Image (cartoon, rainbow, N blue to C red):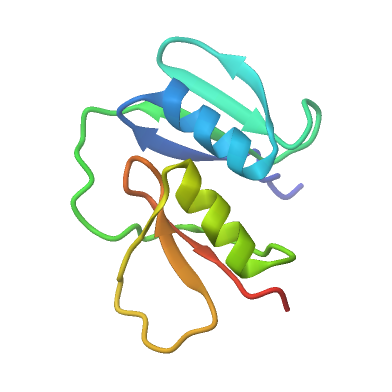
Amino acid sequence: MPSRWEQVVVDCADPARLARWWAEALDYVIVHETPDEVEIRRTPDELPGLLFGTSPDVKRHKNRLHLDLRPDDQAAEVERLVGMGARPVAVGQVEVPWVVLADPEGNEFCVLSSA
């Protein structure tokens, strides 16, 4: 029997703060919370989830794994996410149809064009 994708784990300094930021960004709900980790999902019973766990490591380089978001309106979504605390980042992209942002702890993600 093959494995099932359960969650993506995000190491961070403040799991509660970052999980709440991503929950708002994705319209997800918190399904589990302890002082050291918080899991969010689209709905309580829907996998996969995002699990934010405490890590003392400082982020120093571009993420090797990142999320791609595809909104209905790219410009409006970028504006909304930046208003929530994301920031534009340059990771070497040149004339591409997506926008690279970083969450409040510096984790890069892409906002794709609408289609």
